[in-house]
Length: 118
Image (cartoon, rainbow, N blue to C red; front, side, top):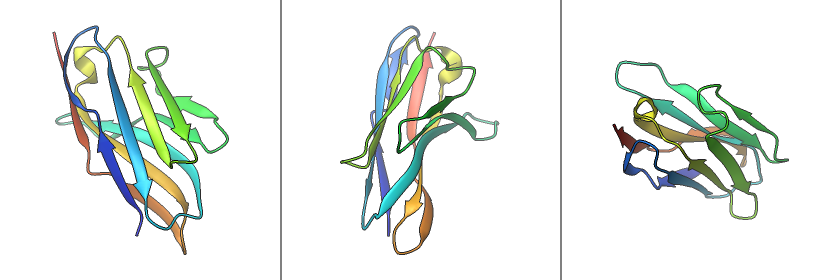
């Protein structure tokens, strides 16, 4: 069973920064991609950013240039550095990982709240 544990959410003023972390644990043979998604009240879950094991990244247009995703393959941990935060970034942020244990997996973390005050 692969588990994802997120940390780093909280309350910050507009213009501030937060760093989210997500560590994958369990028997993991390989991770293909890890990413961050978010869901604001009344809205669908959306991709924020993801990163492949080779380091290739993909960002939502709304966060491009403000957020940076990175991965530590040795620790099976993904980070999201969020700068210049805006009130519209307020959401529950979820970590996702896709890879291979004894079978392929596509797992989610429990979510961490990010609130940006104006």
